Image (cartoon, rainbow, N blue to C red; front, side, top):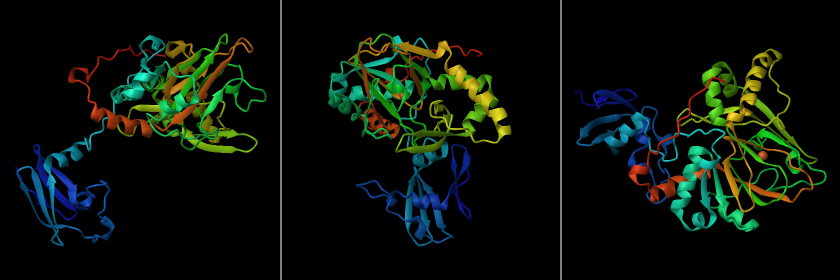
Length: 386
Ligand SMILES: [Fe+2]
């Protein structure tokens, strides 16, 4: 096998039967001495290096690559570490997991946790976070009937983040509603607040009382729908992953606007990671009129598929339950309820998905699952032609 080869811009070294290239700037930037040991933040400044940064010598010693730079500085790289970056394993990320899509019959199988258990047990929080990453939804039961209970639950994942409705919102019908949610009318399937530049990540809906007739919750795993769209209408899927759609939310004192992709892809593994879908908040589409010819068929087909009964999980949210879901992945709605038939009050708030992933990495790292439980059998669903 060849030895290390010094090139003008980098090094080639043998790795598993092939010559693998590493750039000089990348190597120098990521010398193990580049990070502060206590904060683990980078203290090295690659901007100060000369434009023709290069090595004067490099060699392999057992499991390391040893390099001497042109200014005499010496660096040492673990070959296993280099290989991980070559193969794309990088740091390794527990939070990058294959999503388990689900369908309309998911309610009995939905992950459930008890408030008192997750409050006292970090391993349960890791299990809950894992369910959120895999399935995008979980039910917390035996919630205390208090504002504080919801806050405590949210803070297991992260900081409650405000939306343009404030830190929390209360879903109950009221006079002069500024939002359809605050009426007794049905709410069509949507994701919350795509008009915000960073649409909310994880949504918590704590049911404080539900004595009304009707008002069932409607939830759809939009990744399941988008995956079928990708297989059956690939051109539509492509359009919905590329066209940025304008959304707008207005009140007397607010005019919030942004553009979002209808279907989002996970940069880590290419999976469908979520959607931005709300006909309530969709602004006037501003593509060229010729582009409308291709956009509307894709938009309409996907919206119609979202409403198909085979994807629709319908259930009644009861007092003392908190449904927690990925607002980018789960399209949610509500059947109408009979106004005056009984009290109905849901209190909601949001936490960022980045907080969820951070908590999962830390708590799962501290509370690993038994090896046998690492790869649970996944309920397989046949892919059907829509
Ligand atoms: Fe909503």
